[in-house]
Amino acid sequence: MSTPVNLPGHYRLIELDTVDSTNEEAKRLAAAGAADGTVVWAKAQTGGYGRRQRTWVSEPGNLYLSLLLRPDCTVATATQVGFIACNTVAEAAAAALPRGTFVTCKWPNDVLVEGRKVSGILLESSSRDGHRMDWLVVGIGVNLAHHPAETEFPATDLAREGAEGLTPARLLESLCARFSANMVLWRNMGFAAIRRNWMRRAHGLGQPLTVRLDRHTFDGVFEDLDGDGALMLRMGADLRKFTAGDVFFPHLAPGH
Ligand code: BTN
Image (cartoon, rainbow, N blue to C red; front, side, top):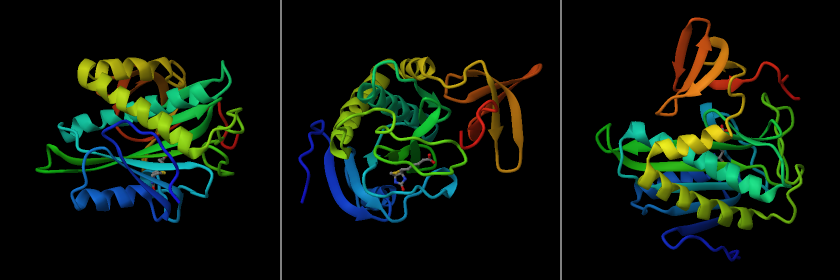
């Protein structure tokens, strides 16, 4: 049975009990011509995945959704939507949690509560000519009722951090309304406004940080986010720019 969900007018909801992955479903719908604003929401996923093809454990109780967008922009510009999604989740989490709870954004697109991961965001896209966007899928997973144990980066969930009476359906509504508003902000004010909001919640700004790529690890200080969303790492006299990578904070032991 479908759950009553109130979404912004131009969004169309596809609600599923279970699916392999909402991102996979959104990509299938995109290939079949589905419109901008299609929202795929599943109560559970059998094959949920995150960045670098890591498994995203997807038992019922948490939120799993993918937004299908067809933004009129280049592939490079579309990465900015990840920061829009990150700000959106951080705003929704802060609104649901007790006042004063520490909600931060971990580069590039994770949301932390009290230093632990509560949400991950995965962008997947296809371009028309290798340059202009055809479709963009924004996959969002939020730990609402439970979180995986023994993750490489410590995890938590909103209920554990004090969110009361929040259901996946209510969080979906809150996210879609805020995401739609943040997309308008992006269109009207550009990435500078999105970057400013992300920076207000940036986790570990000015602090030691490790960036891990497939083969190399870089230690430095998180100095800035550049005008395109790249992480600027101070390594002595060098300022290195990263557009991808996994970030760790040396003062936080894994599993903390
Ligand atoms: C990450 O932190 O690596 C990103 C995790 C993204 C998980 C979400 S859950 C909804 C959507 N469907 C998926 O299979 N993945 C994303």
